[in-house]
Length: 313
Image (tube, rainbow, N blue to C red; front, side, top):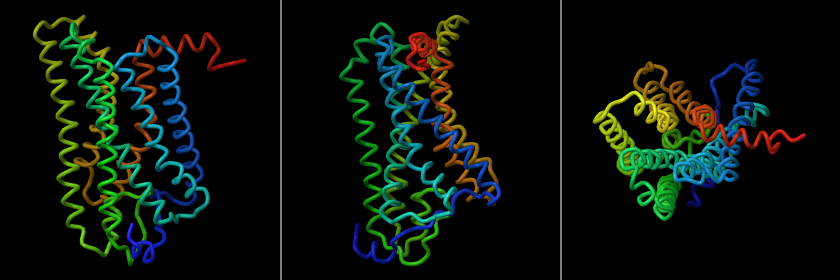
C-alpha cells in the first residue's frame, strides 16, 4: 500500500442495507440467524465428509472445499454488517476495507472454480463411468483444487494491488454493506483505466472459463443421456447432478434475473440485493441442498444422529 493512500483516507463509511432504523432489529435477528445457519450447516457437511468413509470420493472432496469456502465467504461480509446494524458505527479502517475486498474476491472466484470442477467430475462420472476411477484419481483432484485456490488468490491479489496504488482523497462513503471493488473505484480520484481493463479482461477470462466448463460438461451429459433415453437413466442422472445444478442456478441464475430483468433506475438497490443473494442466501442454502437432495449425505447424517454425535445427551 502506498503511503499517500493511508494519509489521505484512514477509514471508509459503509452505508449498509437500505432499511429504515425501526427495521434494524428484525433484520439483525434475521441475518444473524441466516449466518449461524450458514456456518453450522457447512461445518456439518465438513464433519459428515470427514467421518464417513463412504463420502471419501472426488465429488465430496470438492464439496468439502465448497463448504469450507462458503463458511469464510459469508464470514467476510456478514459479521461486519451485523456489527454495523447493532452499534450504528458504519466506519471501517482503510486496511480492513482492503482486506475485506481481497477475501471477498478470493472466495467468490473460488466458488466459481469449484462449481466448474464439480461439473467436470459429474461429466466423467456419467459419460465415462468405466474410466472414472482412473481419471478422477487423487492426484488430479488435488491438482484441480489447488489450481482453484491458486488462481483465486492470484485474482484477488491482482485487483487488491491495483487498487492499493490509487488515491482516495475526497468522499469516503461506500453505498454498500461491504467494501465492493466497483464501489471503491468510484470513490478514487486517480485514473482507474488500468483497473477497469484488468476487470474486463482477466475477470472476463476467469468467468468465461468457469461457465464454459460447466456448460460443456452438462452439454456432454445431456447428449450422453439422449443417445439412449430412458426414464430410469434420466432419474439417475438428476439424482447425481440435481444438487449441483440447483447450486449453479442459485449462483448464476439469480444474478442473471436480478441484473437483466430488474429496473435500471434501481441500480444501487439491485447491486445490494444481488450481493445479499451471493453472500448471505446462497451459502446458507447449499447445506440444505446437498443434505436433503443427496441420499449418501442423509444416510451419513442418520448414522451420526443414531450415534449421538450431534444430539448428545
